[in-house]
Length: 363
Image (cartoon, rainbow, N blue to C red; front, side, top):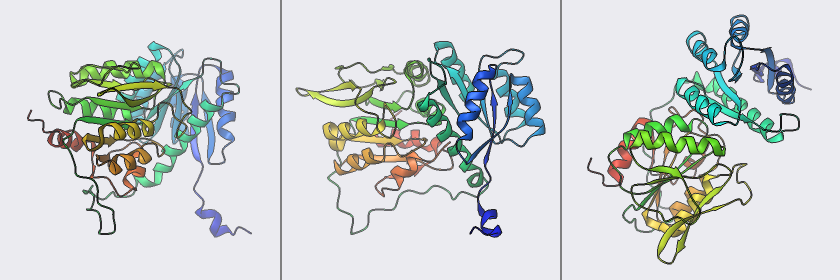
């Protein structure tokens, strides 16, 4: 029997506001969310103005916010939410169009925590949309208590103990590999700006995103870092000074064509529910580049990248991770850090300078 004192220890449900101009979509999303006992839909709203009214009268943890709505659209509402209710997390939900992808990127830069893409065939029976939205709501919701706790300053990882098998001799860094998910786009823009004019090595990047978004991300990173950045193409060689982004829906892996390292794209099963996934990129890059590989795991939900980082370390490569305090979600970097093999755990603003030093950049 559960006692009254035990019941009081159970965390309160995550309180959600669903905002969409379609009554059918509002109902479907609400019913999907209510299937999880950790989530309760407190209210719904048909546009941004009504959403602000609901926020004024209800205690809300997370807003699921549509983009295109009458009276007040999602981007305008987001700006007001960030001003009036800065502690509320906002997840943008939109159909997968180029215009909505661009707006979603603007929303992330304005303070939205993340986005989910509505499936083209509608929400009815869209299990992947349901899984992704619920997992993100729960990840942000669980951070409510953690956000109120003081976070210790990040520290370099302690050297391996005597019981830890010695790593192979480290070689000169010849390639960088970066993995990210939730909170990744703004973090990547910050990182690429800090690498601007430095780091001649090629950069391989896997960010959990659908196809329309990865193409747009590559364009934004080109401007932020002043380096050519594009979605990877199957069979293309890996060249210095360029950044290759895993296209949405495709794993990006590293192979050899003779003596030349090349990229391959495949649609093998998702790993950690993701395609593209970070683990296959890191595993294959470790196999090809060995001691020349330097990997970085940024903010993201889940544990994708941890097994890949173990492969990097076994091959004599190196990896660092973003710290908890500066991560939107410390899932992926936390899992990689838990391997005990990371060289450093750093706040986002220190990762760029660290990489510049580690790659021998003089600028």
